Image (cartoon, rainbow over all chains, first blue to last red; front, side, top):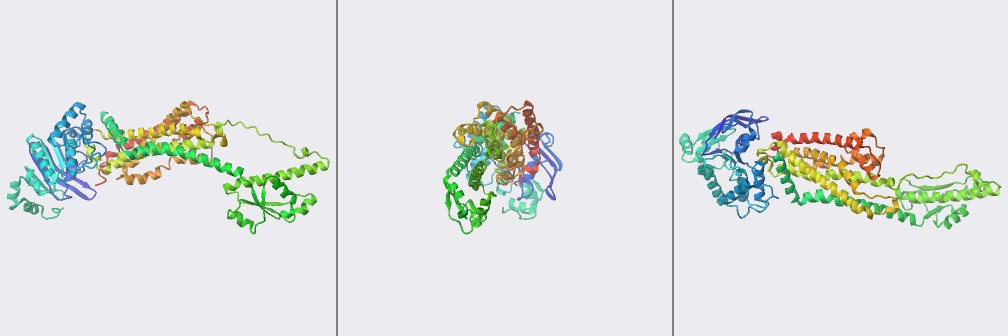
Amino acid sequence: MIVVKNLRKSFGDVKAVNGISFEARDGEITGLLGPNGAGKTTTLRMLYSLLPPDEGEIRIDGLDPARDAMEIKRTLGVVPDSRGLYSRLTARENISYYGELHGMDKKAITDRIETMTRTLDMADFIDRRTEGFSQGQRVKVAIARAMVHQPQTVLMDEPSNGLDVMSTRALRHYIRNLKEEGHSVVLSTHIMQEVAALCDRIVIIAKGEVAADGTAAELLQRSGCDSLEDAFVKLIGSEEGLLA
Amino acid sequence: MSGLTTVFRKEVRENIRDRRALFNSLLLGPLLFPLLFVGMMWFLESAEKERAEKTLELPVIGAEYAPSLIRFLEQQGTVILPAPEDPEEMVRSQQVPVVLRILPEYPEKWAEGLPAPVEVISDPSRQESNAPIRKVKGLIYGYGQQIGSLRLRLRGVSPQLASPVMIKDVDLSTPKSRAILAVIFLPYVLMITAFTGATHLAMDTTAGEKERKSLEPLLINPVPRWQIMTGKMLTTMVFAMASLALTLVSFRIVLPYLPVGAFGMDLTLGLETLLKILFVISPVAILAAALLTLLASFAKSYREAQSYMGLVILIPMIPSLIFMANPIKAETWMMNIPLFSQNLLIGELIRDEAVPLSWYGLSIASTLVIGLVLAAMAATLYNRPKLIFSTS
């Protein structure tokens, strides 16, 4: 469960995040939807305590990233925009490195990788070095790495970036499973179809502010449009960034 | 602390698989420098020998004024060449190293028993002409001595009267202390190796990690940043130490193949000396790892980091360059200066001199203090979000 209230962050004169508030509940998928440069990544970075907010409040299962950074990192699983795998390590070594950094013992890591290899269908490449992996394989390893310690809250930044149709389907399937298991999932994206297909709640972000917030049906109703795409354009007030 | 060791183990494993890291740290220094050293020595020696054995060819102007001098020179194996048109130009353009000019007043002065003038035209600033110049001057001086003592004898005077003082050389240098070149060269190579051995790792674990975009996910793990950075610096240090140890071993293997005779060098590195040198220089590896990591952490990419390193590599050269220009005697206060003190201590160790224990202590302590301060700075550097995200 994530509660964000009036979050603000500036870089020099640029107000990247300018008063964002939203909630992400357990057992729900919350989508942060917005054009490129709207402040989604900055918001996520504040959630996983890599950036300190200038103002505002964040609570993740009651914890404050500013004060309980280590504790929060233990309960979070993060798939950042930059996947950043180590190309000279195998997929298994990449995942187990993060397991060790989370303080897991060898047995627990081995078992966990075993399970995730099955759920994410990684058996073909789990013991290969990640050099030359396809985008789909990379995302799978990045997800497995982020989920190795079984976090309650999952943050994903543009998870389907660069994936082909099959990989995207597999990814969506996996994310829905997380929701079934009662995890709180937050994903940021600029892709309309992704939000429509996955998210229970949609937070539309534009120019560092929340333009609208609600379920898909609520957003359609509020904007008086037939399609989510039209609703999105109407709610953020421009078509900027949609084609990116 | 388990985060620190995890990072350390992973970095070691990853870099052992990296051909570039292995090449830079474990192959380049340990192989290149000793070979360079041996090659240089062989070259110097053979050049010296060639010059010593070569018959001296000497263009002479005005040979007709001093037939007996010319005969003397020829008896000593000199080949007398006819007078050139423009001797100064010939020397300047390096066609000949030295030209002898016998002045027209030579016969007249000679007959009067006054010093007869000859000119040795040469350019002593050219290193390769030093040997022929010395040889020509030596021959002429020897001729003068011979004639001088003959004249004295003719007048019934003992030639010994003309040499009131006699110099005898008493050489106290041991063969080892004559190994000046090695004393300068080995510390120089080791200082550079401590830095080159650390460079690639320092860049790869910081700027490289940022460039490959793996830094951000790494820092989301519940491990304090100082532990992550210290684990990285530890890896860098271990590679630098390995590089140093291998360089020393390869020097030990290579030294017996040096042309000993030509330089009067007796340089064998015993195991004990090797270990002492490694011990003395190990704080430099820590200093280098910390300094290079600190600098590379500011860079956005491996390439940018590389552009800083070109300048940093000059730092370990400075003490050696000072010693080459101006060899100085080691004193206690010098032991407080990192790099400088190691340079002096290694020199003393090679010469087999007894070194006060306090010198080791001072050298190690002063270098460690600076190394640890730099390491502490590097360890907290990624607490600044600006440096983590500087690629995006």
